Length: 228
Image (cartoon, rainbow, N blue to C red):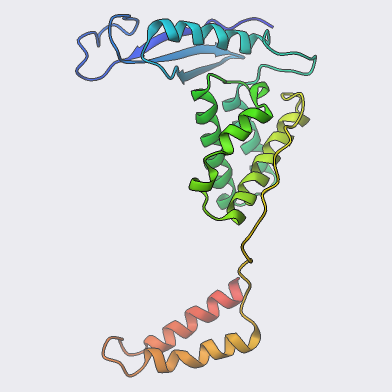
């Protein structure tokens, strides 16, 4: 596999006196990479302000993209960003709702940004150790264990997709997330009737509510009930 030529360049701050030279090694502005692979141009943050460190990261990235740091015949230097786009396109073609697509996009972009801070840009770098490190902050990000279960399930779908496309040698085994919260259940028939019965007393005959408010609320509750 041919190694793409990666260029290190600088995105200067507005006040940088070297702003006219994107290859200046004399400033402390953030370094970035760009390269072309399979006819597509890529741009990524280097995650450093040091030109020397950016050069070192560049060499490791070139190794990843050329498959030199990987083992096994099924490895492919598919970038994580490209894999995410293909995965989203596949989900869209399956008729997945826009809401679910947005969840995949948000969560996988978070994964991509995390891996790039670790100097990893390709799908083949998604090891179990990396995923464990990525999930370490989920307790804060997703306080609900049920939510963490759902996010992990979507992550598994993506990893399986990468494995099926031979971009990943094996699917990392993920630790089980135990749900400790009872799922929210719909109202029973008696509970629903009791709710409707309380609406007139709550929203009628009070100066805070406009005339017809009770009827509007009742209609809204019925809409929610029958639309799911």
